[in-house]
Length: 460
Image (cartoon, rainbow, N blue to C red; front, side):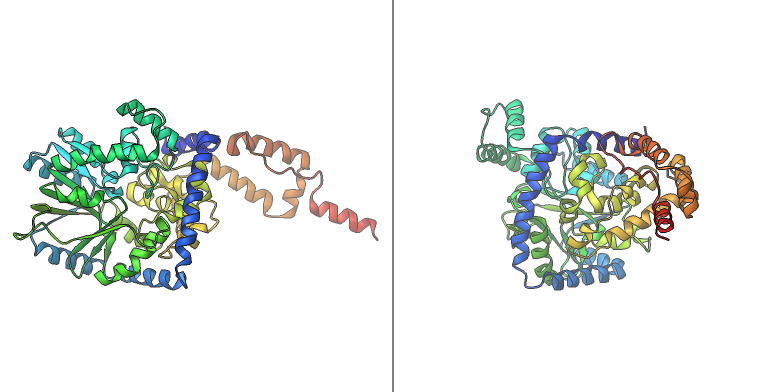
C-alpha cells in the first residue's frame, strides 16, 4: 500500500474524530494565547524576523565555511566531530560509541534529529535502555508512540489520557493530577540520570565562532542529561549553524516567542567541550555528529533551499488548518505540518512523500507566522510541479485534469452540459475525491452565460 494511500486513509479517519479535534483545538488555543502575549513584547517583530532571515540566508551562502569553522573550534577542546551522510552512517557512529563505553543506559534530551535517525531503536538493539527525559517525549515513549508535534510531543493527549496511561503503566492512582504525575516522573528520572553511561542531546544552534552547541529547554532535563553521564553525544542537523554566539540574543527570544510564547526559554545552555581538569560535573568524552541525511538535497534545489533556515519553532504547525484537522501522525514522518511537507520529499524521497506537498490549502498562514520568513507556500507549489514533472501523480488525476481543461477552456464546453448532468458528476466526485461528509456546491440548471443571454434577449 502506497504512502499516499495510507495518508488519505489516515486523514479521512482522524479528520472526523471529535475527541481528537477537541483536544488539539484546546491545546493549540492555549499556545495561541501565549504567543499573543509573547509577540506583544516586541515593538516591531517584523524587524527581528527580517534580521533573523538575513542571517540564516547569509549562512546558506557560506554554509561550508561556517561548518568547518565550527568543527575546528570545538575539536580544539577535545570534542570528536563525526560527519554522517545519512541515517546509516549516524547509526554506525552511535553503535560504535555505545559499544566502546559498554553502555547499558542512555538518557536523552528532546531532539527531533534523534527521532529522525531512530536512535531509541538503535540503542535497544544493542541492549542499551534509552530513556526520554523531556516530559512530553517521556509520555509518548511510555505510550509506544512517536512525537506528535516538533515542540509539544504529547499535544494530542489530554490530562485524562495521560493519567489513565500512567495508571496502566506505573500503577499511579487513577485520576492523578498533572502535578502529581510530573512529580512521579521527576523522581523516576533522577535515578536514570545518575545511573546512565551516555547522555544525548540535539542542538538548537551551532555557533561557528566559538565552536559551541546551544540547547534550549524548559525542564532542566537537558542539563541533567549532560551533568552525570561520562559521555555526551550531540546529534545535530548541519542546518543548525549560525555565525556568531552574540546572535543568540536575537534567536533565543524569537524561538521562545514563536514556540511557547515565552520571553525566553527557561534553560539555555552552551556546551563547548567535555569537562576540564578543574571541573567537577560534566562528561569526560564528547562527540558531535553532524547529520546531512538529505539536507544537501534541499540545499541543491534553487527553489527549496530556504527551508533550511528553519529554527524548528513549530509556529507553522500550530497555524496550519490542515495540521489542526488531520493531526501530526497522519504525515507519517518525523517533521509534520508545512515545514515537514516541504522538507520530507527531499529527505526521504519524492516517490514516497511527494503527496505531502499537496496537503496544504496554500492559505499562507504558515508564511505569515514564520520567524525566519521561509516562503513555504511557494516551495510547496514548486514541489507540486516537480511531482508532476516526475510523473508521480495518479494517472486518473491527469485524465480528470485534461478533461476539465477541455471543458473549461471555452464557454461552449461549460454550456454543453446541463446543470443536472454537472450535479450528477460532482455527486460522484464527493465519494471518490472529497468523501461523503463534504459536498460540492450545486450547479444552477442553466449556466450564467445562458441566463445572461436569455435576460438580455427579454429586455430588448
